[in-house]
Image (cartoon, rainbow, N blue to C red; front, side, top):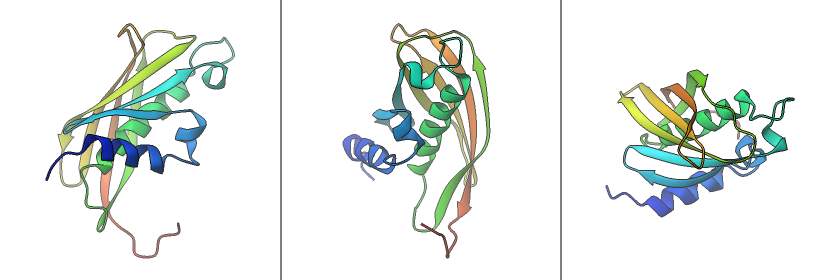
Length: 145
């Protein structure tokens, strides 16, 4: 199978329309065989009351990029992905600018994917370090769309 970075990025950005990812202005910007990268602007829309990046927004970014990355490894005809656990260590405050989340696969099993997601700022400062566990499930036949 050939790796088509542009096709993957287009797919990830297209399926994000009318979702939380669009609300948070998350954009998928880079991909490789074992990683996926997305950015999110830091502004008042993702601040907590003290004017800093909300930890929940960071976690939403991490889960978005890690879940999308797992979808790159499955056969969509027979399987689907569900996040089952996420943890985050918020290490540095951020008031404005852009954060970049890079999801890298730690474990790719047939039913469990484990991702490490590093959220960094424009100067490569580590803002949050997250871990996401996704479960690969058989696709349900009568799913609502």
